[in-house]
Every structure is written in C-alpha cells, then in structure tokens.
Image 1: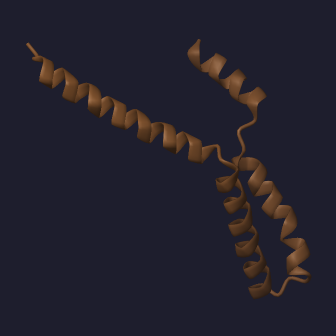
Image 2: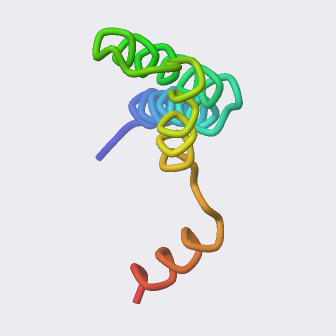
Image 3: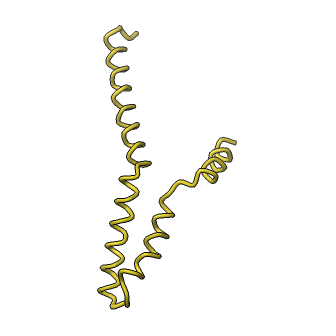
Length: 88
C-alpha cells in the first residue's frame, strides 16, 4: 500500500508531465511555429531553385511553400470528423 509521501510524489510527477505536455501542445498550435515553418520552407525551396537554375526562384518558391504550409495546418472540420470516426 502506498503511503501519503509516495502519492504526493507521484501526483507531483503527473503535474510536471502535464505542464510539459501543455507547453508542447501550445508550441504545436502557435503562430510562431507556423511562421517559422513557412519561412524555413521558403528559404529551402529558394535555395533549391537557385541550385537547379529554375527561373524566378523568389516568386516560384511561393507555391510549394504555401502548399507545404497548408499541409501542416489542422483543419478543424476534418479533425472533428476524424476524431468522431476514431472513437467509434
């Protein structure tokens, strides 16, 4: 049987874990992360287009960057549908 001190320790560990999970979730949904992904993707695509000698790399990099960015977003309608199907 667990004594009070063990229960307190376990509860404290759960609280620490929950704080870490909440921070991770906040990062995953933050605009800082989204803008960072958008910026880094654009830079990588521009560099690739320069190396590949594709014309107008700064303009042409916009479309694949936006496409990738959109793929990283959680679309609420589809998320709700998926969660509903997953639970059943």
